[in-house]
Image (cartoon, rainbow, N blue to C red; front, side):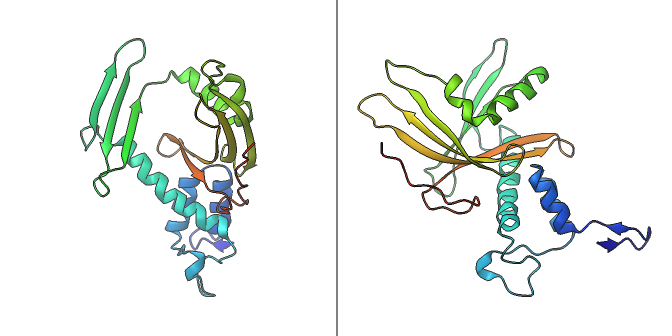
Length: 222
């Protein structure tokens, strides 16, 4: 704990405060605490005894990287559709839906899609609750026998926050395609108190990956 020179009262350790915020899925707030405290966040490869964050604190290091990615993602989604986005289609009905796409300037091969649609405020909490119950995906996602298309299995491997989790999903596809299995790392961000934003970043993990705090299992070929 540190003392505030003006109030002469103990102040929370910024490392502990950031960790508490991250555990509550307030990742961007936690990142701001670390930056405002002037603590250097470095990778394990370049760590030294004098670094601000010990290499053993892998969770905080990895989440600071995720915070940077999410800040860039949120900024991109909140940018004006005129900033490099091309309109693919618009549908005006009871709920407006706009679809945009953008080609990555560096690779000229990566395509980013953006779909905008307003959600009634009364549906926000139910929607987030349903998405958070990952082990129930197979009970409500599309499930067809002809052509075969369904979520056969949805298994939560670990949960690191209120919503942040790693999920293994197996999907049966139409013939002649074989079933597909993916491990998704879903990182949720609750920044509604500061910026009004709620976001989630999902990325696939390869077998043996340990960045989420567990060892990702090999693909089940059965």
